Amino acid sequence: MDPYPAYPHHQDPAPGGAVPHPRWWERKGVRVTALATLLALSGVVILALVREQTGTEGFLVGLGLAVLPVPLLIAAFRWLDRVRPGPWRNVIFSFAWGACAAALIAIVANSFATRWIETATADPSRADTLGATVIAPIVEESAKAAAVLLVFLFRRRDFHGIVDGVVIAGVTATGFAFTENILYLGNAFGTDQLTGTGPGLSSVTAATFFVRIVMSPFAHPLFTVLTGIGFGIASVMAPDRGRARRLLLPLGGLLAAMGMHAFWNGSSSLGEYGFFAVYAAFMVPVFGLLTWLAVFVRQRELRAVRQELPAYVAAGWLAPPEPFALGSLKARRLAREYAAHYGGRTAAAAVAEYESYATTLALLRHRGRRGRAGADYVVRERQLLDALWERRGYARAALAYGSRAAAPVWLPPVYAGPALTHGPAYNPYRY
Image (cartoon, rainbow, N blue to C red; front, side, top):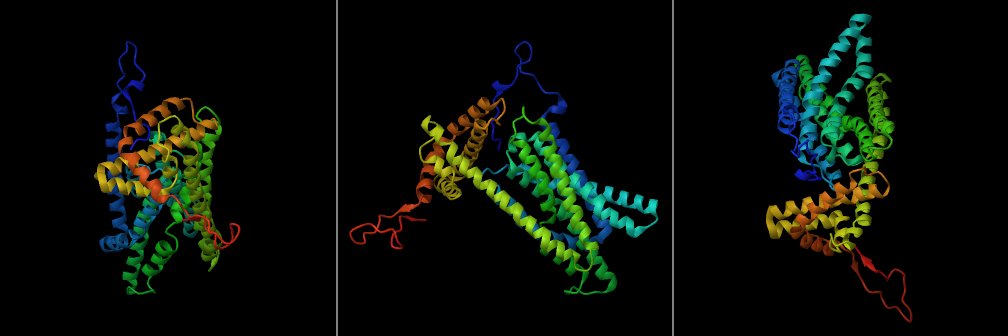
């Protein structure tokens, strides 16, 4: 779903009045095919490399265990993106890039760098330590950040702020962690097979599963989210203002992700309880802080919807109940359910698109009032208004229902003597 529908008459005409035709390498189909081919080849190669290291049985065991946290993490990021959900194609691309391309780059580059350090220093233990704390964070975070950069550059209209950066970065890191967990769990299973250890709690497989799947499934997403926040802040800045900051913010987020990743990898060298100390004193608080930040930004977007859309009600573009309904997740859900019940999938899809366009319009106006919307503000606003107008037939009745069902119920004041009391017996609103 493109939040800014394209109109042919907005293309710049070539000399003579003809609409310019893109070169073959600029065509959307060519780029999509090339990217899909790249990801497919990366997937085949990474599959062969992981299977070679773990064996077929270890690969299957690792795959079965590594897939467990993936649906939960994807669902969490989609829940965070409920106010203005991005298209599924971006989610699929991000996960595929992390699981295939980024994982392949990391395996090849980490192995090469570690062997080079080992040859140069003749000290295998030092090479492993430097590889884990220096090389791996730089290589892996750069490879994952490439997916965020690609969406930022080529799907710019799907990238509206911090939440979009967090979602794209988090899903990419989820895919990367999925492939990495297959490798670690498969190798752990192979170790148990060699030592004759059964599938009990004392096995290496169980210990690896506990540390990577139970305790820290959010580790890689947490690192890469810092990069996504940098891109997200840069995306809401006006294109003609603060160009240096727009370049430095993503770079700063990437450096922060590398530093946090290095600190986490180095925790195992801090003694017997170093890992658990870093986990409890650093990782969990940072995870809580970033989760709070993402939810806070989402609530701020809903507040902007309620504040900005009444201007379009006064102009006749929207119905009076819509700013409240569009600023409430409960009302939005009820509107989609109402549309699905009476109009089927087509109506539900139209209402969902209406909600997304309206949210984008409100945030665009919010940035415009602060001077951050860019030179194409008027064109983009008109495109979004046209998109809303085309879908008003399905959306207005559904949103009117959602606004009534989600609105607080007013109760009359309770008479208690000669005057109204505002004590415990008085309950003017019931939610």
